[in-house]
Length: 193
Image (tube, helix red, strand yellow):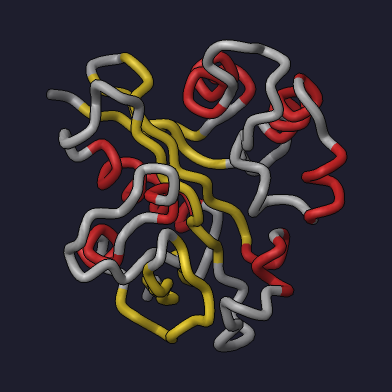
């Protein structure tokens, strides 16, 4: 199995829509991976197809909104990554800012059904790390659940698990006051030398 990871640029928008957009009703107000990317007020104002249009515009920016993982040429995974300063995490009261380093954040990892259990999430996370590094990030943070090996509800699994981040070279940098799916979230960081 061959897994390749590419920035989610405008020419890959259809693949991004397959990963993040509504599956049945094109006008449904699904997340589109915006709930942790934009301020809450704007997130609630964007409805239906406006959400996809907003993401389409993000793909036209100099920094892509994340990366897409492909298995044998078919889109299979996604990881959102961006400078923390550009995200609501910069003002979070639950996930601490531990220093003044201009870190990037990875906050959403998704794998399409049919591709789960095939290391796609690991490849997407590795691709997000490399994308941040290639854009001069000094470090990357993630805020996964510390589920101690217990099963995480799929609706909350997008934040990732501590083990997934550890496998990618991240180390715990701080505890948080955040919880997802009943599990505490930890701040994990991978610094670049």
